[in-house]
Image (cartoon, helix red, strand yellow):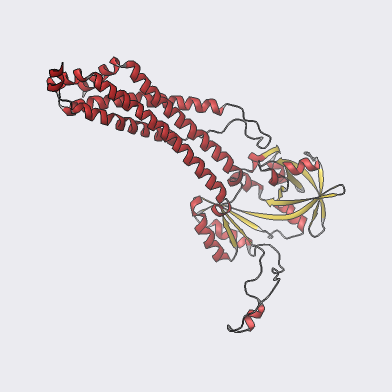
Length: 416
Protein backbone atom coordinates (compact mmCIF):
# COMPACT_ATOMS: atom_id res chain seq x y z
CA UNK A 1 0.00 0.00 0.00
CA UNK A 2 2.90 2.34 0.70
CA UNK A 3 4.22 1.79 -2.83
CA UNK A 4 0.76 2.25 -4.37
CA UNK A 5 0.29 5.46 -2.37
CA UNK A 6 3.67 6.74 -3.55
CA UNK A 7 2.72 6.10 -7.19
CA UNK A 8 -0.65 7.86 -6.65
CA UNK A 9 1.13 10.92 -5.24
CA UNK A 10 3.53 10.91 -8.20
CA UNK A 11 0.62 10.89 -10.66
CA UNK A 12 -1.03 13.64 -8.61
CA UNK A 13 2.04 15.86 -8.83
CA UNK A 14 2.27 15.20 -12.57
CA UNK A 15 -1.23 16.67 -13.00
CA UNK A 16 -1.09 19.07 -10.09
CA UNK A 17 -3.12 21.87 -11.66
CA UNK A 18 -6.03 19.61 -12.64
CA UNK A 19 -5.90 17.89 -9.25
CA UNK A 20 -6.07 21.24 -7.45
CA UNK A 21 -9.06 22.24 -9.59
CA UNK A 22 -10.83 18.99 -8.64
CA UNK A 23 -10.02 19.48 -4.93
CA UNK A 24 -11.27 23.07 -5.09
CA UNK A 25 -14.53 21.80 -6.59
CA UNK A 26 -14.98 19.44 -3.66
CA UNK A 27 -13.97 22.17 -1.19
CA UNK A 28 -16.44 24.65 -2.67
CA UNK A 29 -19.31 22.17 -2.65
CA UNK A 30 -18.70 21.17 1.00
CA UNK A 31 -18.26 24.79 2.06
CA UNK A 32 -21.57 25.78 0.50
CA UNK A 33 -23.29 22.61 1.77
CA UNK A 34 -22.28 23.25 5.39
CA UNK A 35 -22.97 26.99 5.18
CA UNK A 36 -26.33 26.61 3.47
CA UNK A 37 -27.62 23.99 5.89
CA UNK A 38 -26.31 25.86 8.93
CA UNK A 39 -27.91 29.10 7.81
CA UNK A 40 -31.21 27.55 6.68
CA UNK A 41 -31.65 25.52 9.86
CA UNK A 42 -30.66 28.49 11.98
CA UNK A 43 -33.37 30.46 10.20
CA UNK A 44 -35.85 27.60 10.73
CA UNK A 45 -35.07 27.54 14.45
CA UNK A 46 -35.56 31.29 14.65
CA UNK A 47 -38.90 31.31 12.79
CA UNK A 48 -40.30 28.24 14.52
CA UNK A 49 -39.05 29.50 17.87
CA UNK A 50 -41.29 32.54 17.56
CA UNK A 51 -44.23 30.18 18.06
CA UNK A 52 -42.88 26.90 19.39
CA UNK A 53 -40.84 28.41 22.24
CA UNK A 54 -43.99 30.00 23.62
CA UNK A 55 -46.27 27.02 22.97
CA UNK A 56 -46.74 24.18 25.49
CA UNK A 57 -46.36 20.62 24.25
CA UNK A 58 -49.88 19.92 25.53
CA UNK A 59 -52.51 22.48 26.51
CA UNK A 60 -55.38 21.35 28.72
CA UNK A 61 -58.46 23.57 28.63
CA UNK A 62 -62.25 23.59 28.39
CA UNK A 63 -63.54 24.56 24.98
CA UNK A 64 -66.94 26.24 25.05
CA UNK A 65 -69.27 24.13 22.89
CA UNK A 66 -72.85 23.00 22.70
CA UNK A 67 -73.76 19.77 24.43
CA UNK A 68 -73.79 16.90 21.88
CA UNK A 69 -76.80 15.34 23.65
CA UNK A 70 -79.79 17.59 24.15
CA UNK A 71 -82.36 16.93 26.92
CA UNK A 72 -85.09 16.08 24.40
CA UNK A 73 -82.92 13.26 23.05
CA UNK A 74 -82.97 11.62 26.48
CA UNK A 75 -86.77 11.54 26.63
CA UNK A 76 -87.53 10.04 23.23
CA UNK A 77 -86.80 6.66 21.69
CA UNK A 78 -84.51 5.88 18.77
CA UNK A 79 -87.34 5.94 16.23
CA UNK A 80 -87.89 9.66 16.74
CA UNK A 81 -85.81 12.34 15.03
CA UNK A 82 -85.49 15.60 16.94
CA UNK A 83 -84.45 18.85 15.27
CA UNK A 84 -83.10 21.51 17.64
CA UNK A 85 -82.09 24.79 16.06
CA UNK A 86 -79.84 27.59 17.28
CA UNK A 87 -78.27 25.50 20.04
CA UNK A 88 -76.25 27.55 22.55
CA UNK A 89 -73.24 26.39 24.56
CA UNK A 90 -73.73 25.59 28.22
CA UNK A 91 -73.69 28.59 30.53
CA UNK A 92 -70.61 27.76 32.57
CA UNK A 93 -67.26 29.27 33.41
CA UNK A 94 -64.27 28.36 31.19
CA UNK A 95 -62.33 27.11 34.23
CA UNK A 96 -60.77 23.69 34.63
CA UNK A 97 -62.42 21.62 37.33
CA UNK A 98 -60.04 20.07 39.88
CA UNK A 99 -57.12 21.87 38.24
CA UNK A 100 -54.84 21.45 41.24
CA UNK A 101 -55.48 17.69 41.39
CA UNK A 102 -54.77 17.40 37.65
CA UNK A 103 -51.46 19.25 38.06
CA UNK A 104 -50.45 17.06 41.01
CA UNK A 105 -51.14 13.94 38.94
CA UNK A 106 -49.18 15.27 35.95
CA UNK A 107 -46.15 16.14 38.07
CA UNK A 108 -45.88 12.46 39.05
CA UNK A 109 -45.86 11.34 35.41
CA UNK A 110 -42.26 10.50 34.33
CA UNK A 111 -42.96 11.74 30.81
CA UNK A 112 -43.70 15.25 32.04
CA UNK A 113 -40.94 17.85 32.37
CA UNK A 114 -42.95 20.76 33.74
CA UNK A 115 -46.54 21.73 34.53
CA UNK A 116 -47.67 25.34 34.77
CA UNK A 117 -51.14 26.86 35.20
CA UNK A 118 -52.47 29.79 33.23
CA UNK A 119 -55.47 32.08 33.55
CA UNK A 120 -56.62 33.83 30.38
CA UNK A 121 -58.95 36.83 30.68
CA UNK A 122 -60.50 39.11 28.06
CA UNK A 123 -60.19 42.76 29.11
CA UNK A 124 -60.40 46.32 27.80
CA UNK A 125 -57.72 48.94 28.26
CA UNK A 126 -59.31 52.34 28.79
CA UNK A 127 -57.38 55.00 26.88
CA UNK A 128 -59.34 58.21 27.21
CA UNK A 129 -62.66 57.60 25.48
CA UNK A 130 -61.30 54.59 23.55
CA UNK A 131 -61.41 50.98 24.77
CA UNK A 132 -58.73 48.65 23.39
CA UNK A 133 -59.58 44.95 23.35
CA UNK A 134 -56.82 42.73 24.77
CA UNK A 135 -56.11 39.40 26.40
CA UNK A 136 -54.33 39.18 29.75
CA UNK A 137 -52.46 35.93 30.38
CA UNK A 138 -52.01 35.16 34.05
CA UNK A 139 -48.81 33.11 34.27
CA UNK A 140 -46.47 31.49 36.72
CA UNK A 141 -43.53 33.74 35.85
CA UNK A 142 -40.81 31.43 37.19
CA UNK A 143 -42.08 28.50 35.10
CA UNK A 144 -42.46 30.67 32.01
CA UNK A 145 -38.87 31.91 32.28
CA UNK A 146 -37.46 28.40 32.81
CA UNK A 147 -39.41 26.46 30.20
CA UNK A 148 -40.93 28.97 27.73
CA UNK A 149 -38.09 31.52 27.39
CA UNK A 150 -40.29 34.37 28.57
CA UNK A 151 -37.32 36.60 29.44
CA UNK A 152 -35.92 36.30 25.88
CA UNK A 153 -38.89 38.22 24.52
CA UNK A 154 -38.84 41.01 27.09
CA UNK A 155 -37.41 44.06 25.35
CA UNK A 156 -37.85 46.20 28.48
CA UNK A 157 -38.29 45.38 32.14
CA UNK A 158 -37.34 42.51 34.46
CA UNK A 159 -39.41 39.31 34.83
CA UNK A 160 -38.51 39.25 38.55
CA UNK A 161 -40.51 42.45 39.01
CA UNK A 162 -43.57 40.82 37.42
CA UNK A 163 -43.18 37.72 39.61
CA UNK A 164 -42.82 39.51 42.95
CA UNK A 165 -44.90 42.67 42.58
CA UNK A 166 -48.69 42.83 42.78
CA UNK A 167 -50.82 44.76 40.27
CA UNK A 168 -48.14 44.79 37.58
CA UNK A 169 -48.46 43.94 33.89
CA UNK A 170 -46.22 43.32 30.86
CA UNK A 171 -47.71 44.83 27.70
CA UNK A 172 -47.25 43.62 24.16
CA UNK A 173 -45.15 45.98 22.06
CA UNK A 174 -47.99 46.89 19.71
CA UNK A 175 -50.42 47.46 22.57
CA UNK A 176 -47.92 49.62 24.47
CA UNK A 177 -47.31 51.73 21.34
CA UNK A 178 -51.04 52.32 20.81
CA UNK A 179 -51.43 53.46 24.43
CA UNK A 180 -48.03 55.23 24.46
CA UNK A 181 -47.37 53.47 27.76
CA UNK A 182 -43.86 53.04 29.14
CA UNK A 183 -42.24 51.34 32.13
CA UNK A 184 -43.58 52.61 35.47
CA UNK A 185 -46.78 54.12 34.13
CA UNK A 186 -50.22 52.92 35.18
CA UNK A 187 -52.93 51.69 32.82
CA UNK A 188 -56.63 51.19 33.51
CA UNK A 189 -58.11 47.77 32.83
CA UNK A 190 -61.78 46.81 32.65
CA UNK A 191 -62.85 43.16 32.77
CA UNK A 192 -65.78 41.66 30.86
CA UNK A 193 -67.87 41.82 34.06
CA UNK A 194 -67.23 45.56 34.42
CA UNK A 195 -64.63 45.48 37.20
CA UNK A 196 -61.88 48.12 36.86
CA UNK A 197 -58.32 48.17 38.16
CA UNK A 198 -55.12 50.17 37.77
CA UNK A 199 -52.02 48.15 36.84
CA UNK A 200 -48.42 49.33 36.69
CA UNK A 201 -46.46 48.58 33.50
CA UNK A 202 -43.37 46.56 34.47
CA UNK A 203 -42.21 45.40 31.03
CA UNK A 204 -42.67 45.38 27.27
CA UNK A 205 -43.04 42.03 25.48
CA UNK A 206 -42.31 41.49 21.78
CA UNK A 207 -42.80 38.07 20.26
CA UNK A 208 -42.08 39.10 16.66
CA UNK A 209 -45.70 38.51 15.59
CA UNK A 210 -47.21 41.98 15.24
CA UNK A 211 -50.87 40.93 15.46
CA UNK A 212 -50.25 39.02 18.69
CA UNK A 213 -48.28 41.88 20.25
CA UNK A 214 -51.28 44.19 19.75
CA UNK A 215 -53.56 42.12 21.99
CA UNK A 216 -51.36 39.96 24.23
CA UNK A 217 -50.15 41.02 27.66
CA UNK A 218 -48.97 39.15 30.74
CA UNK A 219 -49.46 39.43 34.48
CA UNK A 220 -48.79 37.36 37.57
CA UNK A 221 -51.49 34.71 37.84
CA UNK A 222 -52.48 35.98 41.31
CA UNK A 223 -52.99 39.47 39.87
CA UNK A 224 -55.39 38.14 37.23
CA UNK A 225 -57.27 36.04 39.80
CA UNK A 226 -57.71 39.16 41.93
CA UNK A 227 -58.72 41.19 38.87
CA UNK A 228 -61.48 38.68 38.03
CA UNK A 229 -62.47 38.16 41.65
CA UNK A 230 -61.70 34.43 41.49
CA UNK A 231 -60.17 32.09 44.09
CA UNK A 232 -56.55 30.90 43.97
CA UNK A 233 -57.65 27.55 42.50
CA UNK A 234 -59.26 29.16 39.44
CA UNK A 235 -57.34 28.34 36.20
CA UNK A 236 -58.43 28.22 32.57
CA UNK A 237 -55.43 26.36 31.15
CA UNK A 238 -52.73 23.91 32.21
CA UNK A 239 -49.59 23.91 30.09
CA UNK A 240 -47.59 20.70 29.96
CA UNK A 241 -43.97 20.42 28.84
CA UNK A 242 -42.73 16.91 28.00
CA UNK A 243 -39.28 15.35 27.91
CA UNK A 244 -40.03 14.01 24.42
CA UNK A 245 -41.95 16.33 22.11
CA UNK A 246 -42.96 13.43 19.83
CA UNK A 247 -45.10 11.88 22.58
CA UNK A 248 -47.40 14.92 22.65
CA UNK A 249 -50.17 13.75 20.20
CA UNK A 250 -50.70 10.37 21.87
CA UNK A 251 -50.44 11.75 25.39
CA UNK A 252 -52.89 14.58 24.59
CA UNK A 253 -55.56 12.03 23.69
CA UNK A 254 -54.78 10.06 26.83
CA UNK A 255 -55.07 13.12 29.10
CA UNK A 256 -58.27 14.23 27.40
CA UNK A 257 -59.95 10.91 28.22
CA UNK A 258 -58.42 10.65 31.68
CA UNK A 259 -59.38 14.11 32.98
CA UNK A 260 -62.40 14.80 30.72
CA UNK A 261 -60.91 18.02 29.32
CA UNK A 262 -59.91 19.30 25.88
CA UNK A 263 -56.23 18.67 25.07
CA UNK A 264 -54.34 20.30 22.20
CA UNK A 265 -50.88 19.01 21.28
CA UNK A 266 -48.15 21.19 19.78
CA UNK A 267 -48.01 19.30 16.47
CA UNK A 268 -51.69 19.92 15.81
CA UNK A 269 -51.54 23.54 16.95
CA UNK A 270 -48.52 24.41 14.78
CA UNK A 271 -48.71 22.02 11.84
CA UNK A 272 -48.15 24.82 9.30
CA UNK A 273 -44.81 25.81 10.88
CA UNK A 274 -43.50 22.24 10.82
CA UNK A 275 -44.51 21.93 7.16
CA UNK A 276 -42.60 25.10 6.28
CA UNK A 277 -39.49 23.90 8.12
CA UNK A 278 -39.60 20.51 6.39
CA UNK A 279 -39.86 22.11 2.95
CA UNK A 280 -36.94 24.46 3.63
CA UNK A 281 -34.83 21.54 4.91
CA UNK A 282 -35.58 19.48 1.80
CA UNK A 283 -34.55 22.38 -0.45
CA UNK A 284 -31.32 22.91 1.51
CA UNK A 285 -30.30 19.25 1.37
CA UNK A 286 -31.23 18.99 -2.31
CA UNK A 287 -29.06 21.98 -3.27
CA UNK A 288 -26.15 20.72 -1.15
CA UNK A 289 -26.30 17.21 -2.62
CA UNK A 290 -26.39 18.60 -6.17
CA UNK A 291 -23.23 20.62 -5.44
CA UNK A 292 -21.43 17.51 -4.20
CA UNK A 293 -22.53 15.46 -7.23
CA UNK A 294 -21.30 18.20 -9.58
CA UNK A 295 -17.92 18.09 -7.80
CA UNK A 296 -17.91 14.30 -8.29
CA UNK A 297 -18.34 14.72 -12.04
CA UNK A 298 -15.33 17.05 -12.04
CA UNK A 299 -13.18 14.37 -10.41
CA UNK A 300 -14.51 11.76 -12.83
CA UNK A 301 -13.57 13.85 -15.87
CA UNK A 302 -10.09 14.65 -14.55
CA UNK A 303 -9.31 10.99 -13.78
CA UNK A 304 -10.60 9.93 -17.19
CA UNK A 305 -8.29 12.41 -18.89
CA UNK A 306 -5.40 11.34 -16.69
CA UNK A 307 -5.90 7.68 -17.68
CA UNK A 308 -5.81 8.50 -21.37
CA UNK A 309 -2.69 10.58 -20.89
CA UNK A 310 -0.99 7.98 -18.67
CA UNK A 311 -1.66 4.87 -20.71
CA UNK A 312 2.10 4.42 -21.12
CA UNK A 313 2.67 4.50 -17.37
CA UNK A 314 -0.21 2.07 -16.78
CA UNK A 315 1.16 -0.33 -19.38
CA UNK A 316 4.64 -0.21 -17.82
CA UNK A 317 3.19 -0.84 -14.36
CA UNK A 318 1.27 -3.90 -15.54
CA UNK A 319 4.24 -5.13 -17.60
CA UNK A 320 6.50 -4.95 -14.54
CA UNK A 321 4.21 -7.09 -12.40
CA UNK A 322 1.46 -4.83 -11.06
CA UNK A 323 -1.93 -6.51 -11.30
CA UNK A 324 -5.15 -4.91 -12.52
CA UNK A 325 -6.36 -4.60 -8.91
CA UNK A 326 -3.15 -2.73 -8.01
CA UNK A 327 -3.73 -0.25 -10.83
CA UNK A 328 -7.33 0.17 -9.71
CA UNK A 329 -6.19 0.88 -6.14
CA UNK A 330 -3.68 3.48 -7.41
CA UNK A 331 -6.37 5.53 -9.14
CA UNK A 332 -8.85 5.05 -6.28
CA UNK A 333 -6.20 6.35 -3.89
CA UNK A 334 -5.65 9.29 -6.22
CA UNK A 335 -9.37 10.06 -6.19
CA UNK A 336 -9.62 9.73 -2.39
CA UNK A 337 -6.61 12.00 -1.86
CA UNK A 338 -8.37 14.69 -3.89
CA UNK A 339 -11.59 14.07 -1.95
CA UNK A 340 -9.94 14.17 1.48
CA UNK A 341 -7.95 17.32 0.69
CA UNK A 342 -11.03 19.04 -0.69
CA UNK A 343 -13.19 17.74 2.17
CA UNK A 344 -10.94 19.02 4.95
CA UNK A 345 -10.54 22.36 3.22
CA UNK A 346 -14.31 22.54 2.70
CA UNK A 347 -15.06 21.91 6.38
CA UNK A 348 -12.66 24.67 7.40
CA UNK A 349 -14.12 26.99 4.76
CA UNK A 350 -17.69 26.16 5.80
CA UNK A 351 -16.98 26.90 9.45
CA UNK A 352 -15.25 30.17 8.53
CA UNK A 353 -18.13 31.24 6.27
CA UNK A 354 -20.67 30.36 8.98
CA UNK A 355 -18.77 32.58 11.42
CA UNK A 356 -18.76 35.44 8.93
CA UNK A 357 -22.54 35.17 8.43
CA UNK A 358 -23.06 34.82 12.19
CA UNK A 359 -21.38 38.19 12.71
CA UNK A 360 -23.29 40.10 10.00
CA UNK A 361 -25.70 42.53 11.74
CA UNK A 362 -29.37 41.63 11.34
CA UNK A 363 -31.48 44.51 12.61
CA UNK A 364 -35.26 44.37 12.41
CA UNK A 365 -37.90 46.10 14.47
CA UNK A 366 -39.97 42.91 14.63
CA UNK A 367 -37.18 40.96 16.36
CA UNK A 368 -35.22 43.29 18.61
CA UNK A 369 -33.54 40.44 20.52
CA UNK A 370 -31.94 39.11 17.30
CA UNK A 371 -28.72 40.99 16.54
CA UNK A 372 -27.07 38.86 13.83
CA UNK A 373 -28.12 36.34 11.19
CA UNK A 374 -28.98 32.96 12.77
CA UNK A 375 -26.59 30.04 12.23
CA UNK A 376 -26.87 26.43 13.40
CA UNK A 377 -23.40 24.98 14.12
CA UNK A 378 -24.63 21.40 14.51
CA UNK A 379 -21.82 18.84 13.88
CA UNK A 380 -24.19 16.63 11.89
CA UNK A 381 -23.96 18.95 8.87
CA UNK A 382 -20.16 18.56 8.83
CA UNK A 383 -20.42 14.78 9.21
CA UNK A 384 -23.02 14.49 6.42
CA UNK A 385 -20.99 16.75 4.14
CA UNK A 386 -17.66 14.96 4.49
CA UNK A 387 -19.28 11.50 4.34
CA UNK A 388 -21.19 12.27 1.17
CA UNK A 389 -18.16 13.99 -0.37
CA UNK A 390 -15.92 10.97 0.24
CA UNK A 391 -18.61 8.66 -1.12
CA UNK A 392 -19.01 10.83 -4.22
CA UNK A 393 -15.27 10.96 -4.89
CA UNK A 394 -14.95 7.21 -4.40
CA UNK A 395 -17.75 6.54 -6.90
CA UNK A 396 -16.30 9.14 -9.28
CA UNK A 397 -12.90 7.45 -9.07
CA UNK A 398 -14.16 3.88 -9.30
CA UNK A 399 -15.17 3.90 -12.96
CA UNK A 400 -11.94 5.45 -14.31
CA UNK A 401 -9.91 3.18 -12.01
CA UNK A 402 -11.80 0.14 -13.26
CA UNK A 403 -11.10 1.23 -16.83
CA UNK A 404 -7.39 1.63 -16.02
CA UNK A 405 -7.23 -1.85 -14.50
CA UNK A 406 -8.49 -3.36 -17.78
CA UNK A 407 -5.78 -1.77 -19.95
CA UNK A 408 -3.89 -4.38 -21.99
CA UNK A 409 -0.15 -3.47 -21.75
CA UNK A 410 0.74 -5.49 -24.93
CA UNK A 411 -1.56 -3.39 -27.12
CA UNK A 412 -0.28 -0.11 -25.62
CA UNK A 413 3.39 -1.02 -26.02
CA UNK A 414 2.80 -2.43 -29.55
CA UNK A 415 1.08 0.81 -30.52
CA UNK A 416 4.07 2.78 -29.33
